[in-house]
Every structure is written in C-alpha cells, then in structure tokens.
Length: 250
Ligand SMILES: [Zn+2]
Image (cartoon, rainbow, N blue to C red; front, side, top):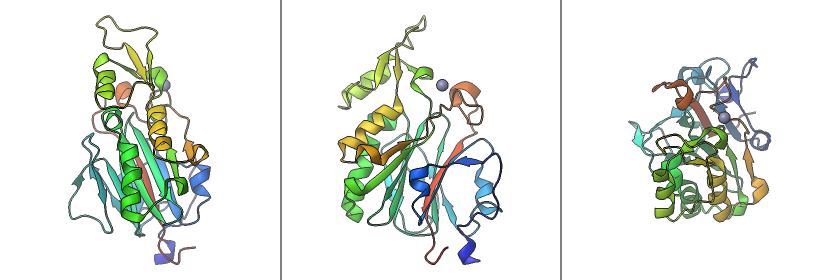
C-alpha cells in the first residue's frame, strides 16, 4: 500500500539502525545509519519501506556526485547521491568511513555522502553543498546535516601520506593530531578526525553550526557497528540511507 511505504510497521529492539533527532523531527524525511544487523535485504521487509527503491553506488573514494530522480539502470560510480524526488532511498555503505546525510528544508531535497579520507581530502562534503545550490537552489543556511558513526580519531591512525594528500589538495591539516604512539614503521604518525574535517567543510560552505548534528559513535569501538580496521572483513558494510516520503504519506 502506497501510504505504508515509508511507515515502519513494527518497532524492533534493539533498533537495526540509528536515527538522529534533528532529522527525525522533519516529517517528510526518512533516514537511518545502519548497524551490523541491517542489510540491503531489510529495506523491503516488514519494518523497512517495501514501496521505496534503494539506490546504491559503486563507491570509488572519489568526489563524484550524482543527481537522480529515478533509480539508475545500473550502479553509478561515485561517492555522493542527491535527489528531490520521493520514494528513493539513497544509500551509502561504510565500515569506518564517514556517512554524511544532508537535507534541504526549503526545497525538500536530500543527499548522502561517502566521506573516507580520500573523499574528504578532495573536499567532497563542501562540493556537495555547492552542487545542491547549483542544482536545487539550496541555500546553505537552510541545509541540515548529520554526521553518522565512523572510526573515531582515537582509533584512526594514519601516515604522513594521508596528511600530505590533505595539504596537497588545499584542505589543511587541522583535523590531524600527532599520534601518541606511532608505529615502528612510522605508518601511524597521526590520528585523523574525519568528522572534524567534514564538519569544517560544511561550515566553510555556509551551514549553521547548530545545523550539523553528529551520531557520536566510533565504528571501531562499538560492537553493534562494522569496522574494516577491526574486523578485516572486505565485504560487510553498514547501510546508511536518506529519502523523501511519498506524497500523501502519513
Ligand atoms: Zn574507537
């Protein structure tokens, strides 16, 4: 039934995905940050949204963004999706990388961003804000964003090469700190705060500080979540998603 497509039929405990109160207060918005017990098959089941279409990317750690108004015939390559159409669930798969979900309250548009260190060094979050402005007329002060769970700075040691890439791309190194215990090979000289880097990009692009929320969980520390660095699992991913309810939904 169309009117049920975005209504969760049943409340599951523990919740299979996490939500943010800022986004949950927006009636036309659907969103979630996946846990290890929430997979792509669950979107169409009871407790999911059987009427909605899940849209996934072939993620490549780029800064490529796709605007869509219907499900693509095949997976597009890129690391951000945006739409102002209803009935689509834009998905970003992560296991330590940062998922950023954005909503334009004025123009009723949404975006989902995959921000690992490479995408962040390319300025993907700022790029998406600019692109939303060009495509939908989105004004940054009317955008809200939620930074989902990702590997936290305490757990995310990186080498000089990663910091060098940020500097080379003009992103600066404000999100880097010297590691307390660099590894013997010098590979973990710094810790990187992915959320700080992307928050900085969003604020730099014009979002209000109180319009950038955060799910304060570390994928590496929290056993409900998936961490590539902890699990060394090359396939399992968290499903993070955002969409616009069908018109007429309750
Ligand atoms: Zn951690």
